[in-house]
Length: 320
Length: 310
Image (cartoon, rainbow over all chains, first blue to last red; front, side, top):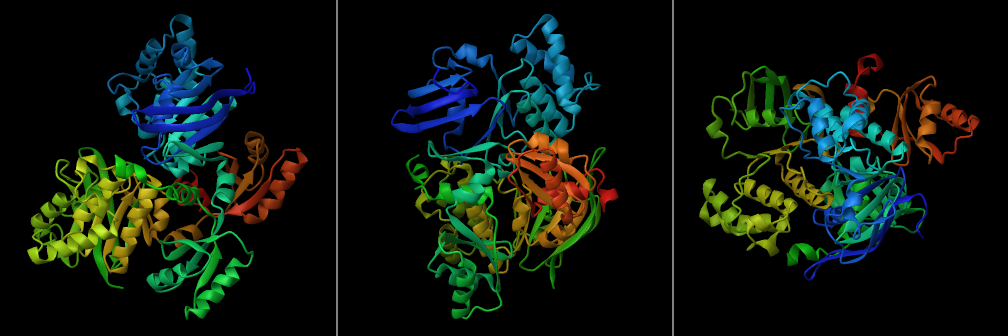
């Protein structure tokens, strides 16, 4: 094997075509043991296609995918036994109890006998559901349901866990508890791939793969992406009226993008001079716009997403 | 400031569940007012009552001086309510959907063409006029829904989670339209379960379990943060957490993708945090005070132990 020993998932020049449509275009990446990788991208970017290939549900048109050292195209069944999957629309049986749901998924994954008992207790522990075994799943609050779904997905002790927008819509405390669990699982050696377009979920991932139009357009930790991927400097300008400010800022030579954000304007400038702030102030003063407040703004992952994805031609919407 | 929307003591119960429990607020002319909270907080019920499509069990509300409980039919021409599932006709084209709503809202025929053209330009949907609504992407459907909801030039717009399931790029375009409406003096009430979206609103109502917990601007909310939030970048976040969690003044430590977020009682604790890590020879890149997000505030102000902290 030429992949690093620690890499659990190795994807090399993966390609998937549907007729003439290239859904996945030469995508390569690795996920190490115990790493959490976030898949970010707009709807239709190719995220689900990649995940289906990784799960052995779709055959790649070209390139290779190895999970746990196994070639997915050669032995999809062996790969499927090593993965767990939990989606935002996870299917729990509302009229079965917590324990019955877990047993049901155990049956699907072929966990039986003494192993089932041990795995059941482990899943209940991890999900913090011990003591609630006899409660009907339908009567659990949102955060608990989510953790039960996670318990079901890890019942067969998978090495790799796929999560599809796992915490959208839940309250912030449940979300934090859930991510703590995911970090615990990762610390225990499980590799996790999270598919989402919620930036607040992306913040919990060790690395983020930004996918657009079937291509991998950026890969890095959340901090790296925020600091470097934008290739520019983000400024926050407060003033009044916003519309006039927006117009004037469009005319500043270094301006790449302007947008209203709350009661201020966010301006993305070409990364160049260190005295951007002063230059911007001087420019606005020259335009007769006084009384403004200029600040450097910390780019968010959403800023990075919008700039990188937005920079690509949106051919897909037109050809579909 | 002249309030366009007034609500007081609104309450709604479904069987044994209290969905909205005595909520009151006012929204000014030309303001973007966010109803923010997780699923089940009461956002949708509140918007339905304000739109006059659901009668409250108690309380009163008015829009533009019209009592929404007593005279909901009079609201029709002034407001627009876009529910989570807006009724687009999937087998009609974009143009046909807009025409349908223009007729439904009795827009004078002479104005229909001009208004439709303006709205389509604002939402960058002109190239798709002849496409069937059923064939649009999620983000485009939401933009078409908004276009239809705006066709009678309402002065107050109520939007229920319009950006749920919409990717960040479409979400930004959507907000561009909302800001343009604001600059024309339209008053907007928008609900969202995305706390990061709350930053875009002028004022927020933070909802939890049917109660209004806070109602102010994002900046005012931020000023309530008890203590400070410190980001520590490290490749050994679990060790960092173990070292920092027991320290005096540390309220909580959250593992994130490339480090931890430490909630401390005072920003002056940063040197102590750094010293504790150096002492234990735990590698870290930087410790710096960061601006709390709305989610951080939600947890700090509404989580367990929030009362003790306040």
